[in-house]
Length: 161
Image (cartoon, rainbow, N blue to C red):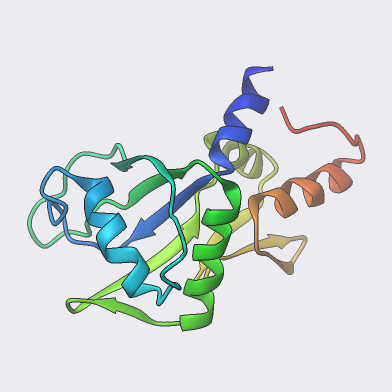
């Protein structure tokens, strides 16, 4: 099913917020491979295995506006998770005076499902998704845990469509 394929492909994606526009000088993979290991204090043996990188598809912001986030697709899910854990452990991350934050990249389908169910959601750094359900707040560390919660809530046991 196409939705399931998109969900699985998003599983390896990471959203990096805070780097100024054009700092990558047209070479986002090179920039992030050179910058992230030191920024996140990763051991030298960690291989990032980046498949592709792009800025979010929003229009390029005007000077002084918030820069678009990088969307990084890793070849391996474990690498993305390792970076999220490193960011969570470090807490506040700063690069050349800019606050850098890392988040899982929710698929459009999951975002739409949350809206359809009338669930308020938002990320709280470092990388925790909070949902307000019937006045009660629940926290999730991965999009997969949100899906499990939604399946149980719907009582269907089916994959979200």
